[in-house]
Amino acid sequence: MITPLLGSLQYLWRPSLRVAAHVPLRRAAHLPLRRAAHLPLRRAAHLPLLAATALLTACAGVRGTGVTSIAPVTAQRVVASATGKTVPFAEMVTAASEADVVFFGEQHDDAETHRAELALLTGIGERRQKVVLSLEMFERDVQPLIDAYLAGGISEADFRAQSRPWPNYESDYRPLLELAKAKRWPVIAANVPRRLASMVSRRGLAGVDSLSIDERRLVAVELQCPQDQYYRNFLEAMGGGHGAPASPHSESSANDGMMDRFYQAQCVKDETMAESIVAGRNAAGGDAIVVHFNGAFHSDYGLGTADRVRRRVAGVKTVVVSAVPVPDVVGVDATEFLDRGGFVVLVRRVEGGR
Image (cartoon, rainbow, N blue to C red):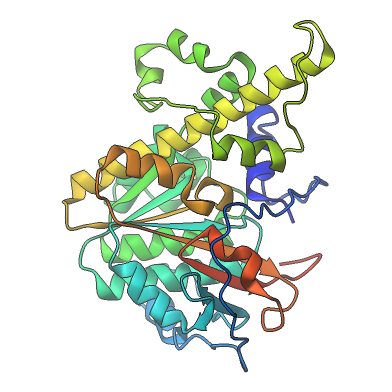
């Protein structure tokens, strides 16, 4: 399985590589950082079989909407981080529905994760009138294409031919977009264009200043990239780390510089997605809820994109959900995952396939 961080970083220097292609990459170690007090975890006697099968049926059964049918989520367990207890999926949906912005941190190539995403979005749509769908998987420059497709101005074939959807779009992201289309929800193409993130990974943040007016609009106006806990998480996940002082011309110094540029590209993605989320919610009205889907690294521990939304909007209420694929959702001790978000969705990992 390709981790969200390493999977997305492939885009910075190898545009031809996509997340769905199983490229051998070293997995990032789980980052047991800033753990809250570990409360006893009540093991589930059985899986909470999504009473949300009904949620999925509500989505897949809408006639004439083109929503792709998707199997019920049957291999998952939801844990509320505040208590460490297993809770019904519907309890998580209800809690998330009370937020202004919901972040769902996914594993890009995990099928059960994507089933849980659709169930969550469907459930929120049943509880809130104004919903905005936001996606890391589409870039700002294709926003006019998304708007045209949602309005019926272009065909799905034309939309998919021009909008650069990820290779797993059909199975994993199309159901989300088609649900939004059926419900007439706005959809945000939240991310910075890949070519611009790649440029930053080579030249650093200074490269943003050389962009044309039109291209600069595709990047967040405000760019902050502090060497904070998110930075330390990034270095650990990438297997890097700044050690003892080195000569400016040493190999170590060169590697540190490269890692810092990769981190700056990560910050540009987070800043741009955060700005897109805030703008999308403002356009929809203050009573709207934005449901944003991104790789888990962008929102785990409330950092990355989630932190940057909170910086932009004082008092905004956010809920972070983090999906964690594991071999055994019933037997695993979820304690080490609890600080990743308000809710952790343990999903059954299937090795060697979806």
